[in-house]
Amino acid sequence: MRIGYVRVSTLEQKTERQETALEDFGVERVFIDKASGKTADRPELQRMMDYVRDGDTVVVESISRFARSARDFLNLMERLSEKDVSFVSNKESIDTATPAGRFMLTVFAAVAELERDYLRDRQREGIEIAKKMGKYHGRKPGIYPGFEHLLAQSRCGKITAAAAMRKLGMSKTTWYRKAREAQGP
Image (cartoon, rainbow, N blue to C red):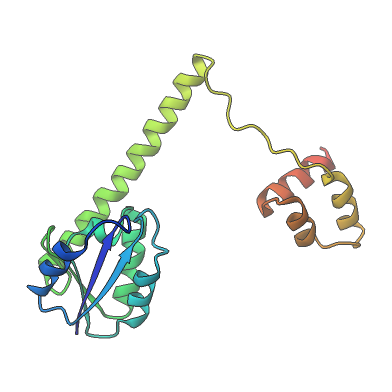
């Protein structure tokens, strides 16, 4: 079965152009999201991912309609691959049912990874320059009133660490880092 996925970023935007493009591919069922693509947590995308099964083909007008980040794209592709579902992107001419399409997907993944690495390098360089200019001082440490009291209660078993974290609105990583710091050298 050929299954289409359509996404526009706002409720006001129209989906007809994408839907018409998918009709040319013989799509039998279409899932439509009117939501930002910045995350893969979109209701119709998730419904489609649950719906597809072995032998199906997901068809999109372009990769940018399916996923905005390389990481989300590759995660979605892995999920489709695990279900033996092919993927076709009209604009980029990718069809993972063909050897050339699988090759293009591999190239796309490698380029995306390279771009992520370049982005991290540029960010690191920018932070170093800003530090030298005195314009960057890092993120301000979080203030957690009552931390010491809840840490003491946690250490003597009156409260769990998880409950203390919830009360403080603190992540697990921050809790254990601050607990180590409070312990001293």
